Each structure stands twice: as C-alpha cells, then as structure tokens.
Image (cartoon, rainbow, N blue to C red):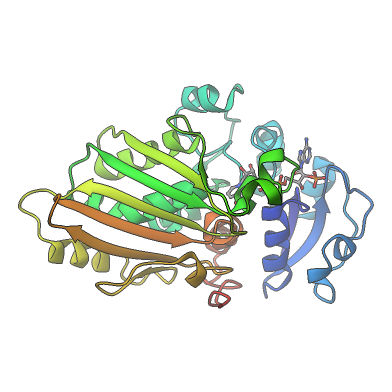
Amino acid sequence: MIKACVVGATGYTGVELVRLLSRHPEVVIVGITSNNYAGREYDDLYPSLKGYFSMKCDELNVKELIKKSDVIFTALPSGHALEFAGEIISSGKKLIDLGADFRFDDPLVYEKWYGKPFKLHEGVRRVYGLPEIYRKKIKNANVIGNPGCYPTSAILALAPCLKYGLILTEDIIIDSKSGVSGAGHSLTLGNLYAECNESTKAYGVANHRHTPEIEQELGKICGKEIKVTFTPHLVPMTRGILSTIYCNLKEDISVKEVREAYVDFYKGEFFVKLLEEGRFPRTKDTYGSNHCHIGLAYDEHTGKLIIISAIDNLMKGASGQAVQNMNILFDFPEYMGLDFPAIYP
Ligand SMILES: NC(=O)c1ccc[n+]([C@@H]2O[C@H](COP(=O)([O-])OP(=O)(O)OC[C@H]3O[C@@H](n4cnc5c(N)ncnc54)[C@H](OP(=O)(O)O)[C@@H]3O)[C@@H](O)[C@H]2O)c1
C-alpha cells in the first residue's frame, strides 16, 4: 500500500482524484487540503463520497504532507506546485502536478504563457505525463507534469499521423469543445448556468494557453517545430472534450494506411480505442471513464483527413490520467483503479 495526499482536494479535479484513490486497492489517502474549507468534513462537502471516504480537510502544510505520504498530488491553480516541488523531491517523495508547472521543456515558454518565473529544483526528474507516449520516462521520473485536458485530446488524436509522417505538418486545425467543469469550481460569471446553458462560445481564440503545450508535444513526436490553429469552445455540458482536427494527408498516403498506423500505434493500449470506419466519438461514451475514443475520416472533396477524439476532461484529461501515472511510478498495473467503462446514458 502507498500513502497519498491530495492538495486542492476540494476542486473538481481534486474530488475526482479522491473518488479514484479512495477505491484504489493499493492506495490509502492520508491527507487532503483545501484553501477555503479547511476543518470541514470531506463527505459533508461531497455527499457523493459518503460511505467511501471521510476525513477533515487540512490547511496546506507541505512539511506535514511530506512526512506522511509517498506521493503528493497537486490539483491547484498553476504556479503553486512550483513553490514546494523542491522540498517534496529532496525528501525522496513523488509529485504529480495536475497544473501546468511541469509541462514545459522550455522555462521561457512557461513564463510567457503563465506569467511566473520558472526554476527547476535540483534533483527534479520531470516528465510530461502522457503514458501512451512517455511510459518509460514516467517510470524513472519523480515529478509528473500531468497534461492539460485539451492537449491530451489533441495529442492522442494526432500522434500516429505525426509519428509515421502521414500528414503535412502545416495547416493543422484543432477545433475543441469542452464541458463547463473544465474551468474548475471557482465562481466566475461566464460559468453560471444562465450564461452557459443553451449557449456555445469560442474563448481563448488565437491565444489559449494550451496551444504551446500542444505544439511542444506534437513537435517532439514529428521531430520538427510545429504550429497549430487551436480554438476551444465552451458547450453546455458538465464533463467531456470533443476535438475535431483537420489536416492535410500527404499525397501518396491512403486512408487505409492511416487506419493501420493508428491500430499499430495504439496496439496494447488499454485506454485508447480506435472506432470502426464510419463511427465517430461522442463525449457520452467516455463520460466518467479514463478512455479516449478516436474516429477517422477522409474528405475526398478537400483532401483533408479529419480526426475526432473524445475524452472526459476530469478523467483522461486530468485525474484519471494522474492515477494512471501513479500506477506507472509505483509499478502497479496501469489500469488499476481505472478499469471501468463510461457511465451511460
Ligand atoms: N478542470 C479540468 O478539467 C482540468 C483538467 C486538467 C487540468 N486541470 C488543472 O488542474 C488544476 C486544478 O483544476 P480544478 O479544475 O480542479 O480547479 P478548481 O476546481 O478551481 O480547484 C482548485 C483547488 O485548489 C485550491 N486552491 C485554490 N487556490 C489555492 C491557494 N492559493 N492555496 C491552496 N489551495 C488553493 C482550491 O481550494 P478551495 O476549494 O478551498 O477553493 C481547490 O481545492 C488547475 O491547474 C487546472 O488547470 C483542470
């Protein structure tokens, strides 16, 4: 059994982590923290967990958390985990950060998009925590930069095409839709029911923070710098991300080859499912699960390859993926505690 703490356990990704970890056969949760709800009983705040998990929320005290845990999950707004990563690592413990602090290879890119100075502490072995791409590196890391939700959906959808050089690397367009939980639980006017319900809008147009993260990872996969057009949209649902991606298939490549490349790339991957020809993902089919569904089509009229992916933003897009990373770090079967289908309907 390993001991885990969740920092920021009262947020949407935090409560999803607690739901997963409280049922994980190899984990005991030894600490949870909150900013505004310290001293409150967790199952009082989240009755959905009554009978499964009860503990009082603590204030954040990093030294105390380090003393009692093997792994610390930080589910905080970006910028906080950076402050105490050094302390966690020098004590020999592992850190899985759901924010953006450890996702970037280039500190200047992080500083530009997140507005905070970046300093990697001595002893930190950081990795971008996308298991389907970096499984081996994750095993040897002590800090996991858990990927963003939109980047997870886009990178998994494009990785085989870029790895095998099937598409042109110019003019890739990623059109993504997210449920409202993607914005977290803090009160924001734009996320109120009357604002989101029966409405859909684009946001972060031409400047969303996930663009450099997507470009970094896609660039590494194809071995050259890459630029993408990424436009996220807010849609009136609670969970889920659907990404529709348009790109140009190379002239000598057939759709059959593309499909074979996806089958090969994701062979043996438990959480990524390529749908049959003519079938396309729906967020409903991944709701509450750690799975990513991918569908492919070729538009002969325009010569575009269209790739569609669906994930649950709080699962494969955040907490489910974080638990998958923990499983790899501690040599548990990767699907342990995550081996269940989506909730349907
Ligand atoms: N939501 C998603 O779909 C998603 C997906 C992937 C990644 N992420 C990333 O995961 C992280 C958490 O996201 P979330 O959606 O769970 O956010 P959230 O619902 O707003 O929760 C944030 C958590 O952090 C705590 N917190 C806020 N400010 C703090 C501070 N100054 N000191 C200590 N604790 C503080 C909050 O405590 P209180 O409850 O007391 O306010 C809450 O527990 C973010 O970096 C986000 O970008 C989110």
